Image (cartoon, rainbow, N blue to C red; front, side):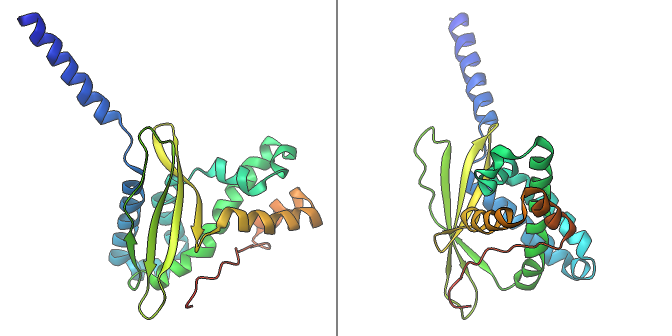
Length: 210
């Protein structure tokens, strides 16, 4: 009897440990990150508005860890990834990340108190390692914008590797634009242009209703 109790206790402890080690659901990852950033903006908006460098650091610390930057960099570079050196791959990844933060930090500051997000129910098969979290971004007087977060399981954490806006992939948009730039000026010059801030490519995604 004691042996059976010990067996059941061990099984229960293992179940608890497995649950503790289970990754946070992908939709919860995004919702928590979004809520955290919104709270920071509400509490420190004036401070961030006066200190852009500080706000970019906040975005980097609060948001970037939820993105699979190596995968995004590889997807954006496409066939050019194969010809890039390890140093170029790392530099492109960092430059691309910084460009995104620079490009969207001002928009986050401007619309932080007028944007609401409606999260759609997550449809995720058992044992899935790749899912899309769907949402609707809403602003007063504007048409809702459908946004999808493509996520994959990386080292037991769900990370974003692409975002679609009205079914248009940001990765694809950037890949097309950077591909044209690389074809014209070469990979190294493109990376240097992004690093220096002279080349700031933004995806041309129409969001309907302004």
